[in-house]
Structure formats: C-alpha cells, structure tokens
Length: 316
Image (cartoon, rainbow, N blue to C red; front, side):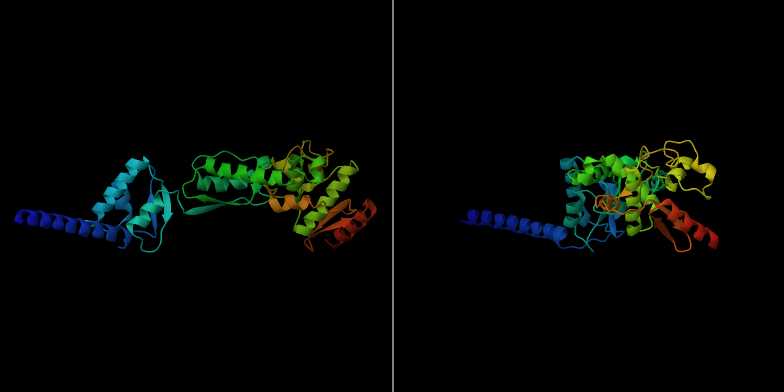
C-alpha cells in the first residue's frame, strides 16, 4: 500500500507540474502582452528566427524561449513564412503574432494610376514601389487605385491589373456599341476624352462630337493627339500648339489622318469607359477651349464655330 501511495503521489506531482507548465505556456501565448519595437511586425525575406525576434521584440527573458521554439517550428513546418510588414492589434500576444505572420502581409500600400496619365507619369510611381518593373502599355490597363500587400512584387500588381482589365472588358461584351467598335477602339476614344475633357459633362459632349465626325468621315482634329505626336506620349507640351504642329506627319495626328489614332494616348479610367457606353448623342461637330471660362464651347456647324471662335479671340 505504501508503494502504491508513493507512485500515486509521484504521478500527482508530475500531473501538477505538467498542469502548471501548460497553464504557464498558455498564459505566455494567449494572455501576456508583448512589447514590440515598432507599431508593426517586420520580417525581411529569408530572415532567420533569431533576427526576426531581435528586430521586433523588446522582451529579452526566459519567456522568449517558448516563442523561439514555436517560431522555429513554424519555419520548419512551413518551410518559410511571409515577409514584409504586418499590422497587429495593440499589445499583441505571441499567438496573435504567429497567427498573423503565417498569412501574407496585411500592411497595404496604394498604387494609384490616374486617368489621363502618360507612361512617364506611371513610371515614377512604379520606380518608387518596385525594384524591377517594365513599362505598362495603355491598351491593357484600367486607371484606378490598387491595393497591394507590403513587399508585393510588380508581377503581383500586374496580375491585379490584368484581372481588372478583363472584368471591365467582359462587362460590356454584349453592349450594342461593341458591335460597331472593338474594345481596343473604345479605349482609344476614352483616352482622347481623358486628355481633352474637363469634367463628366464635357467628356460626354466631346464623345458625341467624335462619334458624329467618325460617321461623316471627318478628321477628328483633336489637339491632344497632336501633342501626343510631338512628345511621343512622354508628357505634356510646354508651349502652345502652332499651325505647323498640326501638319506633323505622324500616325497619331488626327489633323492629318482620318479615323481614330492607332492606339490610346493615355491611361483610361472605368468611369470614362462607362460614359462611352452611355452613347450620349448630340448634333455637335465642332468645339474649342475657352480659357476665360475654363470650358469647351460647342457648335453645330463650321459657320457657327468660326463665329464663336472669332468672338473669343477678340477678347484675348
């Protein structure tokens, strides 16, 4: 009986010890708050677990031992953990940290492509955010704001851009206007509106002028296309257009060539594409920009256009 009692006491001690250990372990992982060096957790690519801890956690005592074991086990099981910045709740525990870093970075950055931007404009943004990238053509991009996890690659941005483009393109596949114009041509028209139009209503009227001129086989005579011809789309022109400019021999010059330019002259936003598919109609054939009133003036015929233009010029 004495031997059995001793064995029972031994097991009770072992059980008590294990219970205390488990409770303490769970306390460390689920209750105890951790002091971080920053308001985020940062992991470099291929960083080892010692450096991850030293670069992020202030605590330097025996409590870290359990976290080191868990982090090392996580690296072995997962082969690698995600890198980048991670947002955490204020005063997180070890469990919350581990739960966060096994997923992609939740620290997002915005990449905004503005309607009417040139490739040069976008390249400045891409250079700030990616070590390696290539220039993005106007034909496959929808201008918008894209959210990316911290340290995302240019390839991941490109996948987002491609997904958005196909979504918008497919949305209008069944529209009657798609029977007359390809989506590539819609983007060309939209790019002209981005560069010429001042606001939504202004773009609608300019769209109607473009469509009316195309129907009548008139040259579009859009200044933005001439500027694109002169600068090769690398930015704006730091002077006013001259009559000599309007005669430049270039496939994008709509003063010289009939029909639409061969491709878009800027990045295009969804709202402008949506505007085109409204297929707004007027009888306008001419317009010019009135710098005094910061608006375009529209006319039904050349006689009326010339009269308004001369009135405007007489005020200058």
